[in-house]
Amino acid sequence: MVYAVPIIVFMDDVSGNVSKQWNKHIVVYASNGNLSQEMIEKEFCTCFITSSPHASPTELMRAVRESISIAAETGVSAWDCRDEEEVLLLPHSGFFAGDNPMQAEECSHAGLACNFLYRTCEVGGTKAMKSSLEGYLALFKSGRIRTPQSALSMLSGGTSKIDASRQTTGIRNAGLQAIIDTVVDLGKQLRKPQDGEQKLSEAELTARLEAEFERLLNGHSLNNHINPLLGMPGVNIHLDTPTEILHTILLGIVKYFWGQTVFILEKSKLLSVLQSWMESISQNGLNLPSFSPDYMCRYRGSLIGKHFKSLAQVMPFLVYDLVPQIVVDGWNVIGELVVLLWHTTIEDREKYLVSAMHVRHDILILKPKFHFLI
Image (cartoon, rainbow, N blue to C red; front, side):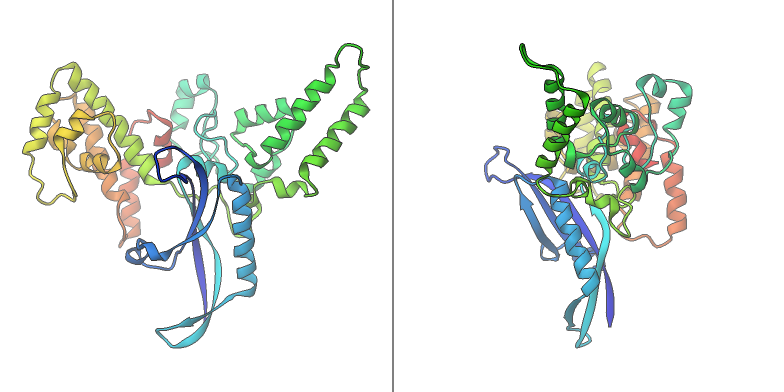
């Protein structure tokens, strides 16, 4: 028997220290996408792949790609203990999980800080354009989907071309950036000779820069320094990096609405009323591991994901007559959205998609993360 095994690859930056001092390490884990939701959440079903405090994410991902490609070509023999027979496993990439900054780097994208701020589509523009009626309305629609081919075609050029490409397209080649910066800086120095030095001709300057570039490549081809995921067979990295809902929803949208609600309540001196109502609410039927009104009101600016997940379930019942109706409507929509996003099993996909479409058009796009819902 031959089984196809989709591999879920997770990459993130973590601290390598036991203490709170930050010591950045890039780590890569993998899971079997064929496992059930109950099994895939167990620690022993997540395999450690590699970690490094020095190698870049694209360098680590190049090794991961090679490992998956070799295993896919040759297959992996295993013993099926249920059917008591030898089987052949053919692994292939399923999707690449991570937070928004790491997924942007996997897509060779500059992230949410650039003009074209989404790794999946080409929505965006200058601040003036996005402030216009046409630009604002465009944020409510999905733009032209990015492709690995279009990204590869833009990963070249000098300083001005690189900066212009990053600003106008959002594409950034992190793997080659250090080499490009070194060559560009050398070019600037050679174009401004010191006193008494003869100015180099354009041909001599080009030869010096090409020699330095070859030296920095250290015998490798240019392709070895370009994002390996952009040319990986069977992978469209722009679509195979699903949005991570902890940072996008709980620490994004819910956090934004909580901050605005607290601001309104503090201004009207009603925060103590909110805390009293939070303490009196019945928790029967709520999926809440713990609900600490005093802590959440006292440290309202330092809450974490579990707090926002609790607030999303109860806020419409607590603030319905404390804040303007538009804020209450926002919390109602967030409540519906959170219920849809935390489905572990979707029985009727068409019905689910209709519900999701209805929710997303009611949300105001106030922050860049809102567009990930479209």
